[in-house]
Amino acid sequence: MTNEELFSDIKKLASESISAHIRITSEDAFRLILNLIVNKSCTSLQALVVNNSSHKNYLFESFNDSVFVRNVIDFLEDGETSFNILTNEPRKLKKSLLFRDAKSSNLKIKNISDSAYNRILNNKYQYSYLVGDSKSYIIGEFEDFENDEQPKVANFLEEGFCNKLNDFYKIIEKVDVSYTGGAK
Image 1: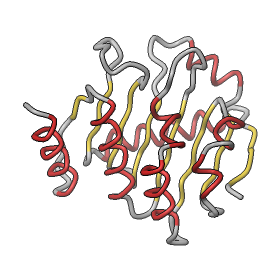
Image 2: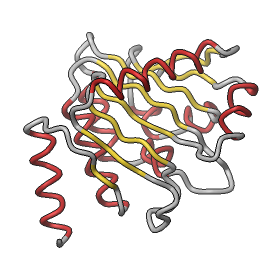
Image 3: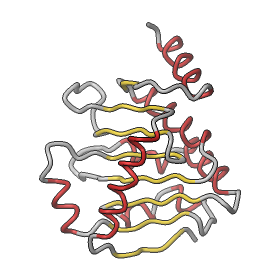
Image 4: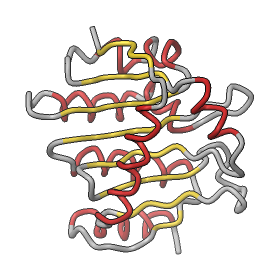
């Protein structure tokens, strides 16, 4: 299957809200899916971004991607929307293009406590994820798209798993979290 065919199939799954697990094998597919989730969302985005400074995390880096930033800003223009982010690197994230350009009080970032971060690091996988409207998600270790041992998947309609990710987010958020504020 060519990239063009793959991207066409991914766009169809998103536009028709078809529940299907999508294995992400390239940075281009990752960026497409990430932006489709933002564009499909009407009320909320929620992200857990675990950044291991010794490796590039493509989800973390997307906060400096102009297309992603523009899509998030468009999403946040409606006063009824929200984007909540938990990360172990809030200072770095606050310096990103997204936080520089977004002028919304609905964009919030919270620091993962050291104890919660250490628990995440002790797991075999240090997953980051984005959930849109509790229906769509993208999850994985977004460091190396060639490594099959680091699974990366998405789905445009799977409320059950999204609810579990939302519950996990709430648990991590409550573990001694320090608030670092919203956008300018």
